[in-house]
Image 1 (cartoon, rainbow, N blue to C red):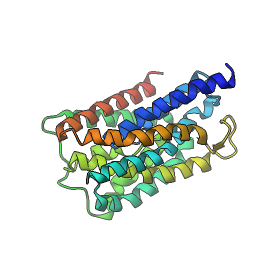
Image 2 (cartoon, rainbow, N blue to C red):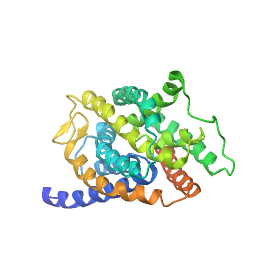
Image 3 (cartoon, helix red, strand yellow):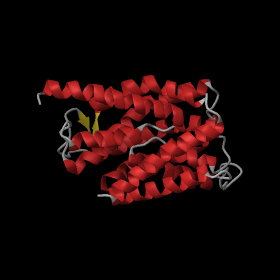
Length: 276
């Protein structure tokens, strides 16, 4: 295919991916990476994006992280207007999430992708079973108040999210609901977590990807800036739409929607870990 033909296919496809990812980001407080990462990786496999297979997953994760910044800003603004962001919790957890995300971004270059996918998938399925339980397990009456407790939960959320190229909602929403946190408030606050995960994660991938071949033009480390910009245009527009849908659902419906999303994500990760 000519370069023009390739662009004519890629641009609408990336915009469509951004629309789906943005809607999910607003609806569930996730960054949209759970959609963006596999699609970008698939585009390298079919040859629409000329990325070396040895760095394809790193490119997909890193580029997804860059899209999370505008997505989180748009989603968080919409949730804030609905009064569903817990600013106090965000301030308490954000420093630990930042440290975890920075470490995760640096470690990702040498991470075992199969093991990471298996852990994510296993945890996701356990969380889904609990969320679908009419009497779900509750681990605490409230999130921990001590710095040690906050670090033990928020740090791994930041690290794992950065390594997988996803926003904080995929992990933080289930964690907060296990601690008796209202689901609408968990989703809204998680939208803002995506911002503090993405920034340090991006720095880690930009640093780790220096002087590595096989990447696309206009890349900074593993991050391809043009692809991220095209996707972000759509995520920024569609994230508020997802947030409005979330606030029209009751708590039970929103929990079921999130459980369905997480089930698909977990099964996908398990398939990637053990299906190959």
